[in-house]
Amino acid sequence: MPTQLKAFVHTLRFEAEDIISIELRPAPGAAAFPAFSAGSHIDLHLPNGMVRSYSLLNDPKEQHRYVLGVLKDRASRGGSRCVHEQLRIGMVLEISAPRNNFALQEDAPHSVLVAGGIGVTPLLCMAQRLQTLGRSFQVLYCARSRAHAAFVADIEALGAPVLWHFDTEKGGPPDLAALLQNTAAQAVQQGRVGGAADIHFYACGPAVMLDAFEKHCQTLGFTNAHVERFSAVEVAAASDARSTYTVELRRSGKVITVTPELSLLQAIEAARVSVATSCQEGICGSCETPVLEGTPDHRDSVLSAAERAANRSMMVCVSGCKTERLVLDL
Ligand code: FES
Image 1 (tube, helix red, strand yellow):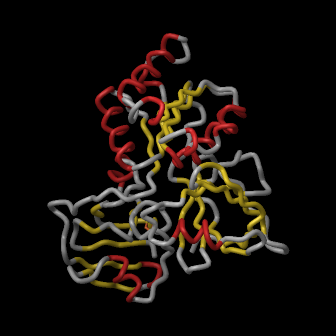
Image 2: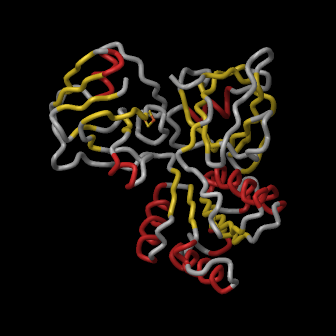
């Protein structure tokens, strides 16, 4: 199980239309918060029993607090609504230690941070880190309107170049392909990088924007493209995925069988073996489990293509298996 921490709600602040920030500090008498790296997120155990993951937005050099930004999602299944309606200053919550599925390449010669709405949160954290390191970077910030754009003043205070796109002012959503291409061309022209392939691009925002971002980066040959998703991508089972297979949980000394009626996670839980979970949709990384033998059928949105190919770990909440037998370090 990942480390659990006790935090108290120190500050709640209105940041933009439907967006609040939550500053957490260690609960009285509880352990200090561990340090975190840019792009990290934590799990919040909410008063309604739900567990939700949120990116940390504050500067990683801050040791005393974690700050999150939460959009009240109209399609909320209860998580963001609970944050907005039930959290109170002084409330003590259980949180996980920070995890990072969206790590910053700190030595990149130039970085482009592409924010869509509330997706700005991990990118604001990255921007502060890049500024501390004295690295070259640019921000592209897209939102429905200025009223819906949170942390604008924080970004402006960094003094880095920012390209703002507000749909209501520009008459519609951005032409992302053109924005990416122009931004890269400008960085090359200014001598920040030798070529566009040296730039690292990071995007966080709605799924439709991230899908477009990945597609455009691929077409434009921008190989250093990184995304952080807060909703799962539907990944169908591979054609060679098995519907029935056995799994050895080596540390627990148990062997279980996964059948079409029972997912891998359900089979693990039925064997009373504990595995940390949060989203159960393959987006948070809580359930990442080392693979000792066998070939998983990766269906998560966390691992990169290279990490999938390496088959060193898998998200057991959504993934399956391509071999008759899988051995997990559980
Ligand atoms: S529980 Fe979130 S990725 Fe598996």
